[in-house]
Length: 113
Length: 114
Image (cartoon, each protein chain N blue to C red):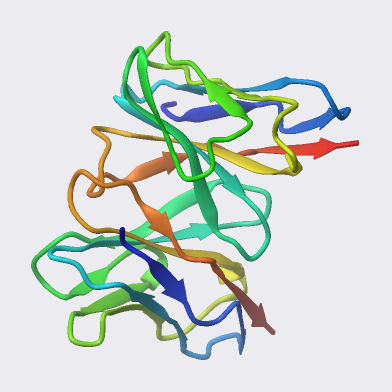
């Protein structure tokens, strides 16, 4: 089964600074990866996903992620964060099309003024 | 508006009681999921269903039960056998089910056992 690890439980950053949230996955024959965002007391919504093709994936709200097969990573980046980006971010993956998603433990992004 | 609704938003239960959490979707999705969220542990899959009248256990099904009598509805019952039920419960749906599917989440139900 696919496993997903988010290396940082919390990431504090100042407003307008760049940020990277790290995600590593266990290798498999094929891999599908997702980033979801959760605002306080709400459900999750999709930021972006990698299924195949270009390794640089652009998502909503100015976020992007790069699929790196050699490092088994799918880190999420944003060049300049806003206060409104304060939320919990989840990386998720599956090993093949018929499998269920496995979620990482989440990273809480705290943007400070 | 299309989406997923969960009710109630907050639920309090006494020990020994069964409670049922509601999940409804009007997205015409085949697949539906229930997750449990605890601080620092991410989301863990309880049950999922890819077709009406069929469902499968996830990673932590013990103490929970589900039904899928209609495509749009996937209620979750937390039974008295669940030893530590206090958590945030999230329902999701997906068009087909499976690892490539984008999942759409409801707003969640926070269950507290008194």
